[in-house]
Image (cartoon, rainbow, N blue to C red; front, top):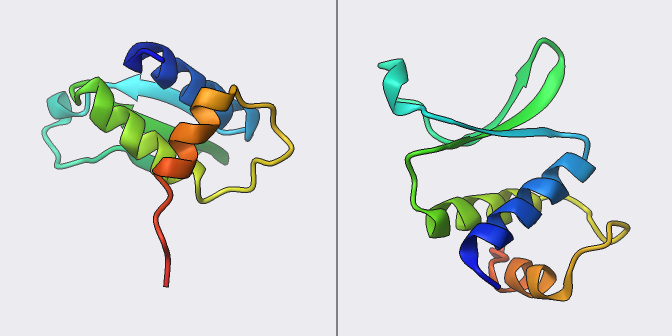
Amino acid sequence: MKSDRLFHELLNIIEKLNIIAREQNLRKSGINIKSGFCIIKGKEHFIIDKGLSINKKNEILAEFINKYEFDNIYIIPAVRDFLDKNKFDIG
């Protein structure tokens, strides 16, 4: 699967987790901000830096998604494989 298609599929999974996902140019803020999860006006958001490479974006999204239970969400097998390969052992 192409990296840009994978990126959109990963964003779709985050939305299915009821988290607002969006890309934003974080470098223009003047503050050292990284991609990640935040709560804005009581709503959960995941903001990813638009300036990152597509592969880095996909790694960040996979790491975030793997923190959640997503067995009840249909995920294309190639995307599920990518998530499995990008699981990090905690502990």
